Length: 141
Image (cartoon, rainbow, N blue to C red; front, side, top):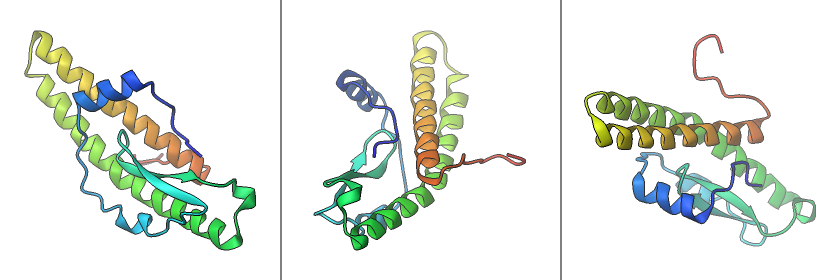
């Protein structure tokens, strides 16, 4: 049920050591929906949100477990727009900061913005996978 692209261990280590993406989101409500016999959550370090990991195939889940998974995915999709706003604001901040730098410092800061842009793309794909439609955050979208 992973909707986002898998990263190699080297990429994960590199991106985690390079940039910690801040978040103020409370993910506690989604964690209470976990059904240990059917699915569990793990915090995806790149996107900063919990993702479900299926313990048993969806088809073998009881109706109550399927309902809990559906509720968890709906709750997760409700967190995505706010997470995107956080990341977009952080991206703008880093981009503006980078404009004042030169040489290697500039390129290092721009590499961070690329990481954030990748994370934003991952979140959009996740939202599409859950909701079946694109999330538009701009007027007229």
